[in-house]
Amino acid sequence: MIEVAPAIRPDLSYIDSLQRKNAEELSFYPKTVFEREIDNHRVLLAKINGDPAGYLYHGALGEICRIHQACIQYDARGNLYGAALVNWLSAMCKAAGVLSISLRCGSDIEANKFWRSVGFDCIGVTKGGARRMRDINNWQRWLQPQLFTASVAPSEKKQDASMWRARDKTTKASQFIRGKVMQRYRIVIEGDT
Image (cartoon, rainbow, N blue to C red; front, side, top):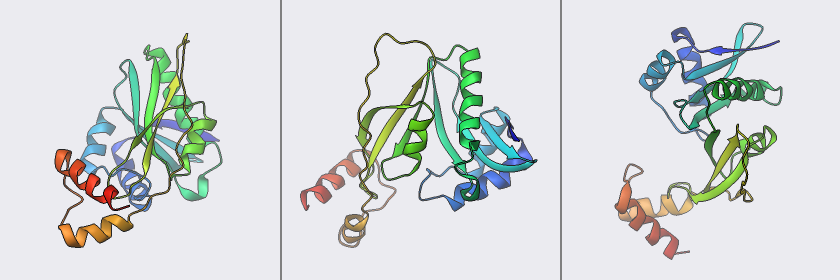
């Protein structure tokens, strides 16, 4: 039996451990962020027979609720735990009058198939960072009836960090650069292809 409930502080070590095990597919959040968001009731935990199986971290319940991170442990994937988390969040959002739930997902991640299967539409594709050179699929699930909705085909572009590694040695670029410097760096990288 699947149980979904807000995470509590003792769940923090499990959440952080699962995040680290899936670091290539997830954005990274420090433990302090999860501590704060658990206290704000923004982290949901899926359990099976009392044992945790995954979590979903979401933003505030405004007009749009954003999913910042969702992860199901590898041996429990495909067993509806993720769907249970999304359904729980959807019910919470509907009760609060939220219009839609959105998220961003790297184009090379298997989770894109999951998001489509639980009722999300890809509404746009943007360029990802220069380190992985992949696209980012923007997914949205409408909770209120819409007159018009537009969707696009999600990108399936695979990540390619080879240019980052090659450039990193010659330009001394860091994965921590941001903004206009990162945009110029990306133009240099893409200009070589």
